Length: 271
Image 1 (cartoon, one colour):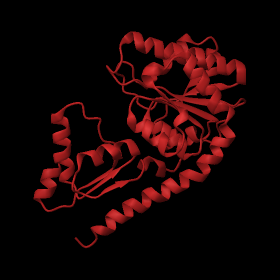
Image 2 (spheres, helix red, strand yellow):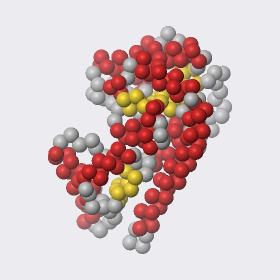
Image 3 (cartoon, rainbow, N blue to C red):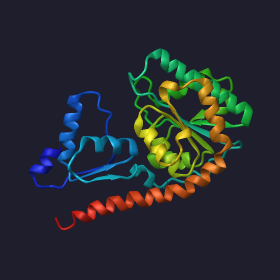
Image 4 (cartoon, rainbow, N blue to C red):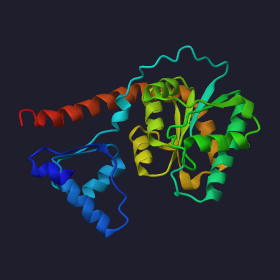
């Protein structure tokens, strides 16, 4: 841990991560104590950066982005083909974050909105569960719940891959992605795939804000069929524009992440 590393005289760097929110004074105190024992604090999105600044910690603070943007596909999925444009969906609800009634409302909103998108745009839907644990309401179970409520379930399927490389390769081939999880959204964006994010906290809203894509975010507590439908239309009808925007901004983001990490590592060379 941090204190052990400091006792042994080792440098401690918090690699790009999110911080907060702090709901208690004890949480704020403990976080400030931990961060003050770091030599560098790298933060992956602007909301967390403002939270870190408010703590008035001593170590240098660097705002960069999630290192997942650097991940490159190494799995060849070119043999997989789709006859229609395809939307990838990575749904997920963290355990105990909402009631069972809200889980059902979440699944029903997705089912109805995806049915409409299939009928309006001639899409196919591929569910890409990210967190598969066997526990209640993991991404695989939520995907099955949504399909169970769909009228056009024959136009949807679940692909449950075994590796991150497979996941990245598949998500890069989507025409659009809808994700409730942070890392599927980052993996999609890094592949310049137009993405709609259903955000459960500020690490997602902050990341999309840093790309100028705040309109592509729906807070989880505001999710309804109507809101999801409007946002699917928004992203789908601007997908060429969004791809162009991401092709411009993602490489800059990647260079910045690499540069920040190199800056910190260079600082400790020879120690």
